[in-house]
Image (cartoon, rainbow, N blue to C red; front, side, top):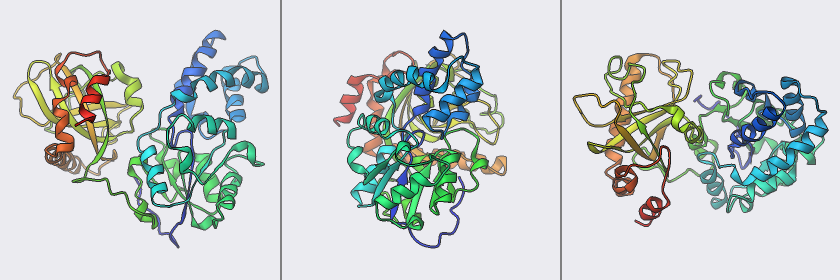
Length: 397
């Protein structure tokens, strides 16, 4: 995460992108496009997905046709695929921190616009699936309402015009490079939240690059701060995963002196993809041993240069022995910080130890401690699943 560049004045208005910034649209794109490619004898290549980020639907369709050599014109392809996408709009989940951010801005009277390359009708359909979202926006601008979509500044300038705002007083939050380019071309301040892993360096034109919406600090821009951080932690909607403990990269105990209980990410890749990389904490249940406090990293561990997203929980207890093969169930209840790189192994170890101290203390707070009694941690459940009964019981406390 980069430090903010000096700003000449404080902002008064916020403009948000939708797909990839507020909504996890990428998961639906692959879900829709994959079967279509299979029907046409092609195989989805996830490494090409980044080419679609920030594009208008027409531009994205043209990229898919060219990359996979499909025998359709762009208009024909869109006529086939668009209805399938429409059926999935309400399956698109909000990204971590999205609802928190837009409701915070509204409750504090900050005029906020939604500006997306998607057609206005698509935008309306997507946000209608998220209770309370639509009324949070002063105005909505779709790509079909301006002459040129991003990276042209037209969408952002139109949003500012509709809010009677001076562009230099606007703060744009974007996940794509075309969106960042558009925001800067409009003369606005820009926070980049890259939706593509390990691409931070490409967003140097943004004023700030952050890991996720959980890391937005409104007060740095003269806006009302969040007041929901407690003891250096942020409460989140709990999520639950489980799996057998497997041997990891061999660095937890050997290199760091911190034994992590690695889980097979392929068992719950869909779940993990919904959550931003970073350091979280919560409770861990071992099938034969009990329930323990834990802190965990989700992500690529930049210091070690992982090539895949991993989940590495550290149970805050001295077991004195390995427990490979045992079922481990996790209730993740809070967030500590974004994933970060470190200049040395010593600084990495120091930060991990600090994360552990923060989690250890926070989990004694009633709002977190209640999840230690979750039935999920004590019962054998399907991998990666949650139970409505568990949620209802805990949320009522």
